[in-house]
Amino acid sequence: MASESTVLVIMTGGTICMKPSEAGLVPAKGFLEDGMAPRPSFNDGTEPRVLETSTETGASVSLRSLRTPVSRYQRHIRYAVLEFEQLLDSSSIDAQGWSQIARAIANNYTAFNAFVVLHGTDSLAYTASALSFMLVNLNKPVVFTGSQAPIFELQTDATDNLLDALILASHFDIPEVCICFQHKLFRGNRCTKVSSNQFDAFASPNLPPLATVTSSHVQVDWDMVRRPVSHDKSQTHALNVQMNLDTTHVACLRVFPGMKPEMIDAVLRVPSLRGLVLETFGAGNAPGGPDNALINIFTDAVRRGIVIVNVTQCLTGSVSPLYAPAMVLGRAGIVPGHDLTTEAALTKLSYLLALPDLTSEEVTRRMAVDLRGELTDSGDVSFAGPG
Ligand code: ASP
Image (cartoon, rainbow, N blue to C red; front, side, top):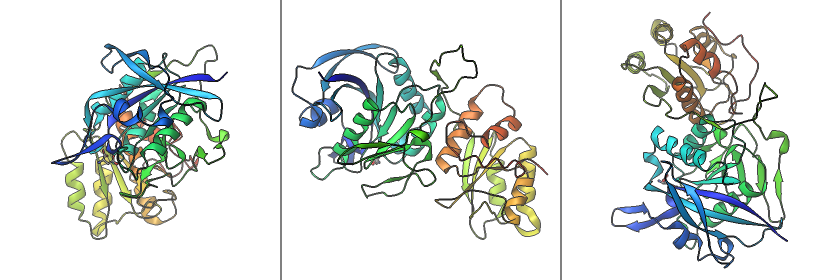
């Protein structure tokens, strides 16, 4: 007899559920009825069942659930779709939206085997990175997906992405926040959106996929899968959620040839700014500015308690103390972001700044340390810290 696994699908919006309107494509409600129920791969035609769920506000809600046909692994997936009150184009999501997703997962954590989050692709890499930091001790799969074309179109990637996400979340014990796109499962905080129109829209430039779906099987790289670790063996891993990331006191700047030091200084003097992600050239190099003006500006900002993280503009590779300009940034107290993506750096910084009572020195120290598999730790400590 085939078994059954339960998945809560959390619908936040995005192209996957969009329909045309006079103002262009907009998210539409009723995804289970209109998008999934009519498709045989999402509905085996058996009597729908009601599942008791909680909304992100904690209100109880009975949702109609459907079941997929049996998989190659002799399992059905029973799922319900929890739609957010306000569906978003993901370009409008913020830290409040991330907390809403985290709450929806936490409120239904024990009732479901896994979670699939449907989200627009534009800010998907930011949201997945943010959730990877927010969901501490995560012990169940949380798989984000979306699509480049709505599920209602004939030529769409939505059905493949959604089915892969459901299968991966419900059949494989990968307790991480992931992004599933174009038959690959990536660690969420390693991803970046690399195409605005191709179906192959996401890449994980510095880490191979955790799993790949082919016509014959699912290949999981189990050695790479992370699990919560407890230093106290008597402790069980309870999910712990850090809400409200501090995105309002951080900024992100991309350096370019001829950039005026005053411009960077103006950003660093935005009232109550606490952190800056600096996208530098190559292995972490920035222009020094005339008479080292830029370096002095950075040194001064670090002294004022602003945490500055150095990430590379390159898609692959890492910030490293190879060239003099990168060494100078390190000596100014700028923390090397190793191979962090900008998305991971920004959300990690926002997460650390939201933790109570951390000094800027402690935030700086933790930025360079791997927390959720977001960076390949080079073990190089000589680069960090003021000289
Ligand atoms: N603008 C859309 C969004 O991010 C794009 C997409 O979903 O692919 O919500």
